[in-house]
Length: 280
Image (cartoon, rainbow, N blue to C red; front, side):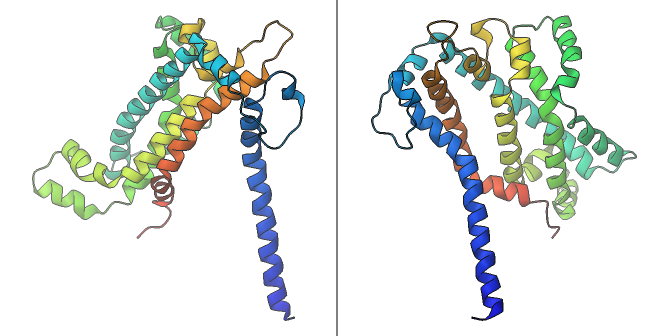
């Protein structure tokens, strides 16, 4: 056999094995959570790789918990509000940083990127004092405020990168026609930026939906908590019992919507992530 052909076969085989390993590592935990969510009682401790029978008692127990259902609505409210606010500020900031020439623009972008690198725990105490001073403790507005602070930097960064790639001729033609900067942004640029907006919006939504530290710190009562905290506080019949079935069922319930969103916007996400990679 030709040595070149042999190397090609070995490379393809190695790549296939690596891809299968990554797929198994990323997908298997979610698959096993689904399998476990359909078990109850002693079956939870039986290691099985397939669903032998569908027992929906865990799902009924979780859905029947009014506080958990309320936490889902809280997460929906907070996540959508965060996306709307971050996109509104992000688009205007991206237009200024991507299309307007002014001194210190690169420094502002570096500051935006640097802010996004701060870990949440580093600003937790200071942000808590701000939330308390604004009288927003145990209020969804506290989460919207804190989530927007952390999602806005990468939103501005991604949208600015995409904004820079749009042809200058479009903006010049709009200016000749007498369009104002806001008209140019909303009537000319935004229709062309849907892939980038879908990408940043979905990333911001996922970040707000999955956030745990701020939600645990800034909320106190069950009626104000979001889904991650509600799942973490699920308890069994006693303090020594950990309800694995309910935990897995709750995890599946809150993960499926994210998977569906990614599948629906898959093409726009890919095009948005690669839009600024090559300058045409």
